[in-house]
Image (cartoon, rainbow, N blue to C red; front, side, top):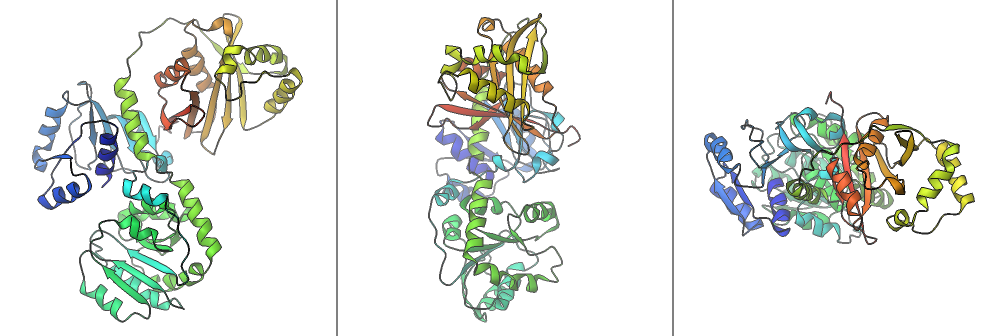
Length: 476
């Protein structure tokens, strides 16, 4: 599903896409139900390395999403993009993506990639989910609960949860998704004190989920679909490899925890959901937080990064005089004022109005004492050539704003100024550097793109696009 979601967005943006893998007839049929025009080539697992080597050089991007060993195919004119899940599927690539919660803290082997993308901002969300993100939802008079464990459910948790819901007082309307049509699930539903409906395979699970007030689910990738839609969740750890994800989700307060194997206390934990289901304010608050946490742009960020990296033309190295960076001081007020009031600088800023001197001095005093703002000045050959302001936007994010001295523009200093300013931003990893640039400011756009900043937010109504670059811990 993750690969199909990325393929769909790529095709919408004009890419020609082929899916290659060890895919059986049932898998091909399911894929074509979602992407009818997608070219699918089934290759036996042992033949996949040879197939990938053959594709290298013939395609612009080779996107890998597999835990098995594959050959290193970089350097043959093809951009190698790779999905990794914690320690699984890690390999050398030009673009490496770990879309798990907290991946910026645990990103494995960042030394193997030139461009890392980490965390829920690159969670891959399907179009079906995005449609439901925009749909409205009103809490039901009789709480509606969706139970969906997905996959094989080897521990029989679906039936266990249905039975445990009998401990929730008051009426519930429960929908159970059980594609395998297991007897124990039907039996549990038949004797439940609640109104329970069992469904088999569901073509549009997001649309069904959006009708419910709470989803009870395993801590797999569907968690991020529900989060993007704003469907409150109670999650449980179904199998051992879900433990890290389960722990992170519950610790972050993104879902109510129902426990880990062997689930000896599952009945009691499920019974406690009764209070939650009748607290409309808490459910609404949780829904809003989930939507903020997963914005649904992850797939766009991945494909837009391909486009930027494939189209990038290496610039020949340009000699640049050495630059030095120091913290700004009150004595820099006049030169910073003159630079900021330059007509070209104002034309590419969010605020294009001329500054008043008194306002500027007050702003500088506040800035110099603000722990969430770093104002730097850059010198070269004994002269001030630029200033860089870093503004903290979150626990990890710092946004850059660079102002070049008008007389220094066109001298090839901007790249050295940015690199030196990044080095001078002494904050702990992981940190993400942001740059918001007007689309008309092509020089700044190219500057940040050459420095490894990738698309983060599409162009807004004011004509500004945002780019981002992760600095990850080498111990990841």
